Image 1 (cartoon, rainbow, N blue to C red):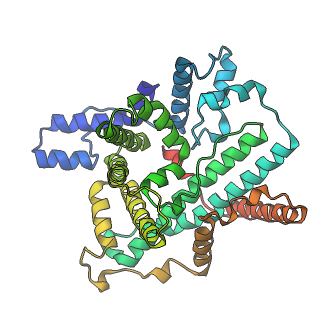
Image 2: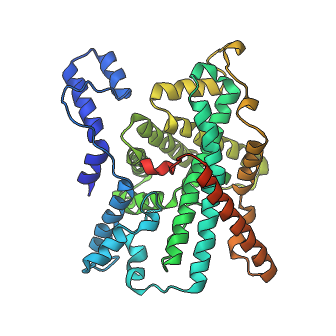
Image 3: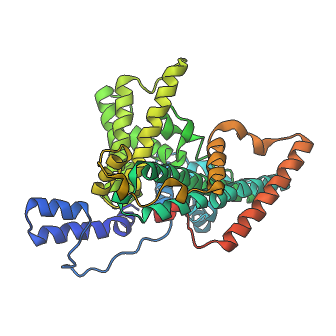
Length: 401
């Protein structure tokens, strides 16, 4: 499983490294070309194309092997049932990652019902709205600004761009997870939640308990705990955490920006363990500053994640904090050029929906309130469908992984 994943995902990167070694440049040129992922074409290899969803279904196949080996699940002797698990279409493309032990019984003994089917439709419509109306609106803002030269951004546009991207990736990915969970429920499958309002976190440790829960759970169960977890002393625990987050970055793709993104989050996780910053406190002022710190940390992390190379990420962060010393006349456009009234409404809606004010909205049991909710979801579905029909191609961000 790892060999197949490694070939499709990292072979191109390996070829570039070998080509740069054969080029025999000085160390500075070699280092720059490696970080910029510049190949020479000397080996004449064709670029390997990444199959859609390979990271997700490979991790699910590995989950089967490990769960059976550990005795957490029985061996699946029906090839079609095993194929159903690995290629289960609702969440195949972008998650959540489904562990075999979580659905082993459901493959043969799940129960479909009208209530589950309608609940699945509601969850699907909810996720579709998050993706099409919220995430795609932010995608337009991001794409329009990202085409500008970095020297033309200035502080305000740099902040607008990365805040828009942070909201885009959250609503894009969580929207897909909602749709996948809803589709699964329609067929009688119960998938675990993948997001739990991560933008309300007070530490990066808490952020990773709430963000892409299926990925962090996978690494915890199949990497962190087998390495020893927190059983062999603080030093070993911190080392295990560093390994897990390095692998998390590498899992996202064959680019040094992803490696750095994993190291960035690993650094804060380790720092919070050492300082106790992740510990809960009742002090409201302390919580306020912890929340600001957390937002800054993961927003800067998204700069690294989105950047084409490490140098661009560094310059972008410097620009965000006004440290590039650009002159005002160098800025091409101001913020109002990219954000009109509609975008402002979408921003406000996104911020409101990022906190658990409507956490249990899909579980309403009052008949009148449920009727209003169903009408609202129907309108949301119609608006989303109309938006899809009128918009250009805009795939889910996690397709690329």
